[in-house]
Image (cartoon, rainbow, N blue to C red; front, side, top):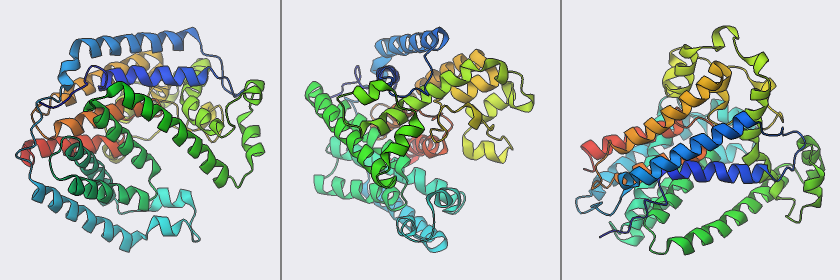
Length: 390
């Protein structure tokens, strides 16, 4: 019988953990540019977290991995799909170049993100490697194959986003891996503490990388962030300012747009149910081809370079608080619906849980239910569960 810690690791409870962490970070108050949280925002976070917690308590058995069976897992099919993905990736390298090399040449980061890759093919490659990585992690944690084979596949699937300098994709992959690891851990509390310390170290290194990329010009970053006296008096290393800005900025931007409600509601074609569905519900790859355009909202960012506003930023712009609560309801439905698509005995069940946990956690930054780099991974895992790895 496999170990399963579904009561503590599932997409519903991850939603609660995520917003608690964001609120705790926000309370540090290190930036004068971030507004005070209003009662409306705090009430929504409390209500949504309470509902998510209730769903977790009542339905955690949906995520029970104890009956997962890898006995019929076909490694040859896995390797074949991995080979196809590498073939497509090499084709992209030939057509568009190799990003990690391009970063050290005349190209700039923005141009790589905007122009690199072959349309459609890149969507398949990104989502394919993301899904295959979670399957490799599941193979490792459940002992489906020899450890050496699992480790080889983990390396082969994490290499592409590193070579392509896709930091967001790589971060999502690691989050999913941690979820599978904790879900199957025999010493959950000990491993959570360990991962917590590792997380603090990673955030510190993230700050060091930020300082390096800004060429050591930390004073300029502090000036841009409009740091407060609380930051200046803090005993924490200054490198954590980067993490604070990135973690707190989505909530700050959401509050900022809520504060400017008279400027938001009723703006021509950007406002209403149609753009709400087109931009927030339909996957981005499809919505772009249906001529739904992401609204220009740069004037609602507290700090110009911090351009994320959580899952609820755009829904508020389009439908006010109705949009925010509708978006939350859809997220809960999406999580409940997707987990029912895969049998609990299927080898694809743990990867599906991991991807749904990613959807919950990364929702603090942006809308993950429509994000092309995650939605189609869920589709791939579902299709694999029905036709390949039953």
